[in-house]
Every structure is written in structure tokens, then in C-alpha cells.
Length: 289
Image 1 (cartoon, helix red, strand yellow):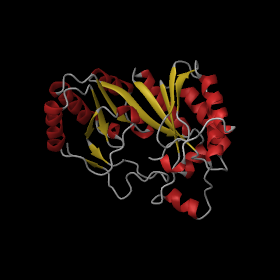
Image 2 (cartoon, one colour):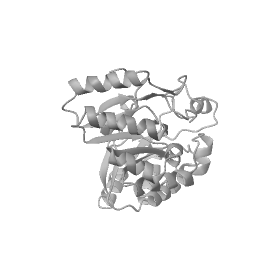
Image 3 (cartoon, helix red, strand yellow):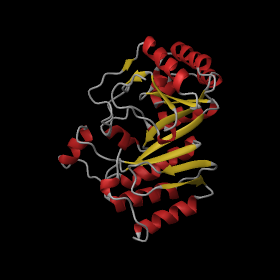
């Protein structure tokens, strides 16, 4: 398989065929993200993608899922995606599910009928990075979307019958906006009602503008206890039914997983145990992106 740069994929796609269709991110301005710095967003040549599909046809017959990388494949024109999905269906008929990342901007550019068409061709799951439901946080990190635009995008995915997984980033508001970040993010999630919520924890990278802001004292990073308090506030304000909740990414201080609202009290109790020192948190040296 032909891979360029650093591949980013959701943890739940670990056993998927990773088919890199684009390189980089179409936005690539978020101050906290160092994944695609110095990389221009490009579409890989069709011949290269076809060769990777041919490789998967020969060597990946036990893999039932395909994840389309990199950061925002959904931004591609509908005609391109339809051709790609038809090729996957024809060459990899045993694949049961196709997934990809979709930004709020990319989703907004697709009509519900276009999304439904992709669903009929095998698209099952869209991963959307909300990061925060607080517009002040989104503005500061140059997300390129507002909370309102991403809520609308998330609802469009749901209306199209697709599975929606939404990622939020604990600590992104820093010390100053921590509580607003948690409460407004919970509100946005309640409004979207995704089938899955994934909570990651901010790890500031040196090669990012946010890393520079932290060195200059402009951004105050939260310590483990404040992160856990923020996570507790987020979960306590969530009002979701039949939604998977995961905080099991390698960046997190505490690995949590459950079903909302059934396991909400259990999740809150686990966080409370960690806050009072009765449950060990993951050390800094073991956290990773």
C-alpha cells in the first residue's frame, strides 16, 4: 500500500483496510493540530489508489472494513467519491463498511441526497471533529467552523441515516475557558445526538501555533485534575440516549467506556474516584497521540 506522511485514523478503525485517497487536510489551520503541518492537501493519483485497491483485493480478504484517509476525504467531489465507492464495491465485495473523516465544512457542501447516495454505495460511518461547542474556543483555535455550523452538519449526517461519531477535545479551552468549553460542548452534543462520542485530551505539540502560545504564556494548559474536572462537567451535562461514550484514546488520563445514558452514573463515579486519588490515572510518560 502507498502511504504518504503520517496516517491518522480513529482507534476503532485499527483493523480496517486503510486506503489513503488524499494527503493532508483541506483546512489545515487548526492551531492545536500538528499532523499535517508543512503538507499541502493533495488528491492521490487514481492509478495509485487503484493499485492499493488491487493490493487489498489480493492480501486483505479477512478485513471487512475500509477507512478512507487522510483528514477530510468527504471534501472531494461527489462524482469522484461515487466512482471510488463503486470501485471498492466491485473489487472488494466482502467489505461491509466504509468510513471516513468529515469536517463540518465538507458535510455542509454535501446534500442529504448525496450523502444518502454514498450510504447506498457502502458508506457507513462518518467521524466528525467537533472539538468544542464553545464558539470562542473554536475561534481561538481557528477551527474554521462554528458550533452552530457543526451542529447542523452533524444533524445532516444523522438525517442521511449514517452512523455519526463525534470527537471532542478536553482541555482545548485552556484554564480560562474550561467550564464554558465543557458545558457548551455537552450542549452541542445533545443537540446533534450522535451515536458515538469520543473524548480525547489535548496534548500540545511544539510545532503548532498553540505550542507557541503555551510557551509565551498566552495559553494555560490544564493539569490532570483540571482535565478530569472538565470531563466530569462534560459528562454530567450530557443528555444522550443510546450513545456510545469513549474516553479510551492514548491521550487520556483515564480510560472510560460506556453507554449513555445507561452508564452515565458509572462513568461519573469513575472520574470522581480518580479526582479523589482512589483510582490511578495514566502517567504523562505513557500518554501519546
